[in-house]
View (cartoon, rainbow, N blue to C red):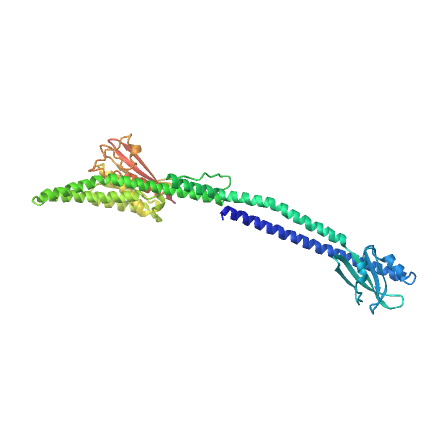
Amino acid sequence: MKLQNKIHLFTSGVFAILLLLISIAIYVIFSNLTYSSELNSAELNAASTASGMISSAGVIQEGDLLRSFGPLDGATSIIREDGSSLGTVTSSGQNSLNNIERTFYNNQYAEIIELENARYTFVSIPMIWTDGSIVNLQIFESIDTTVSNLQILRNTLIVVVILALIPVFISGRLLGNVIMGPIRSMTGTMKEIQRSGEFKRIPLEEKSRDELYQMGESFNHMMNLLETNYDKQKQFVANASHELKTPLTVIESYANLIKRRGIDNPEVVAESVEAIHSEAIRMKDLTQQLLLLAKHGEQWKLSLERFDLYPLLKESVQAFRNAYSREITLQGEEIIAYADKQKLKQLIYILIDNAIKYSEQEIRVSLVRDGAKGRIDVEDNGIGIPESDLPKVFDRFYRVDKARTRKSGGSGLGLSLAKELSEALGMKLTLESTEGKGTTASIHFQAES
């Protein structure tokens, strides 16, 4: 059974049961109150009749007395203690009451009885008769009008329940449509994705940000993640096949050279091994960078902590001084940041490494506070970047013609990776450069107080 039909049947069934229970409760409560009211009224009337009879007894004959005080639609009897009757008067059309066995009651007694599909109130009141004996005044009074009214109420409630079920049935169908709308849209979008191979989104109306809206929003977010990861995977495959082709070709050519001439020529072997080793290292670095760039921002698994940036910069600068024997200065003050220490260190390494590649002069690293913001500057006096190339330097594999050579410029992935890292850390990376004068790379971040 379809989910919409299940929702429809369930909601309609629940409402139908509720309406039925409410109607039954109304009828039972009203009928009990009505019968109780009729019985109380009959007792009051019987008490009044008994008082009137006692005051007139001995003056008026028993038969006339009973006819005078008897009900219009019922019967009246006076019963002795031995069960014999002093007289009984029955109204027209109530002959069935003559066949009832009379019983003497010591105390006042009242009930509703059913006789031959008709209902009566029965009241028995003890009273002292003219001869000093105790007798019962017993009165039967028909309540057919009340029963008829209750029948009308019952029929009315049945009709109301049936009529109420019509909008309930329609509203159940409408509720099913409302709930199933986003689900149908999601299912249709999934089928369309399966058919076309394209990543599509569910159109959302922001009238009500309910659970269905949130489900659609989550689906669209999932599609965004899938499309991003798919694009990254496709880009990784394209980038890897493009960039790894050259070092693999170099390795293959030097391997063939060793096979042809290496046996009798140690110099060829040494040159080939050095070239193969160099290309292997470059391939390893390139592969690591490609794998990092293939990650989505939410997959970096950041380990955030508060720490002082100055010691981190000092350690990074000292590492490059020792490795490259270059003059690198550090200026700054204590600034607390909330970030992933290792990822930020990797970002700083990329910027300092770039500065070393494209500058032979002193490199300056600065840590500056600007109000609630902080900034790390890596400045060189190198060859700089032409203004026309600045917007493109963060593109993958992009090299400025006279700077990004295979020998010194690397793979063209460094700044792309730096951009990805800064975004994952919630920081901003900017680049200012003047051709022939130098370049300044800046990391902007939120400083902790």
